[in-house]
Length: 314
Image 1 (cartoon, rainbow, N blue to C red):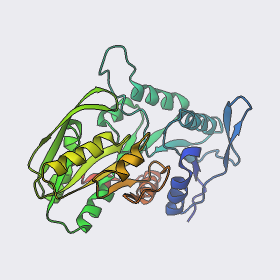
Image 2: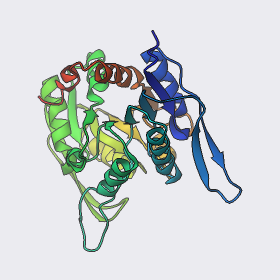
Image 3: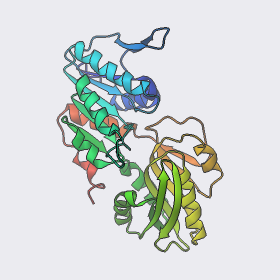
Image 4: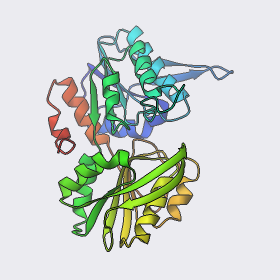
């Protein structure tokens, strides 16, 4: 049943997912529009009252930067329209890869984004599978950090395959992959990679025995799919029976689709935190709509959301 105190709005980049979330929540999306000037400048306008309401704004902050700025404008508009609470639902949190200074004289984009969101007036943030867990600590407002493992783990169990081995595509993903391995009572393998610059791999090696195994690579995102497809090929060369991958955020930029289609991957399982640019037979999409809708309801009703974090804390 609709709650007149709760309003759900979608920004431009996440309309399909927002519609699914609103339907699962039991409400229709609110009426908001983006008005554009001839030079490309734009503003956001709520075409219904939000005074005294708890306002959910749904937007994955994928490129271009307009998507981030649109969310900021909507937060500001809601604040100036006297919304009671403003909750930014950001299924894919852009700039999360810039979580630290990994070389001299670079920006920490993830921290800058948190500053912008808070300056705009956000009261709470809901997101999924941050590239770096410490980004939660960048905020001075509550952050609900969800894990797609709540969807992926049951899917893996449904395969009824006792020959699975979980793999991490790099050292940074070993903690995430280890949680899956522990949950599924399987062994763990690691693909160690070295980079000379972003999106380019200089060398890769396999740690662990994958011979005769059905490998499942676990990662938080797939961008150009270079790491993913090369590691899949390397696992096959080391005797793996098959390779599939699970990645929460399907960024899929540049030659990603072609690489996946021409790779040895049996399938790539992703979520709909980012809309797909086109269809691919090897890509299976699981929806996060019900999970976000449930978290939103619990937040409004001041209920515990601990059940969504059991797997992550194993």
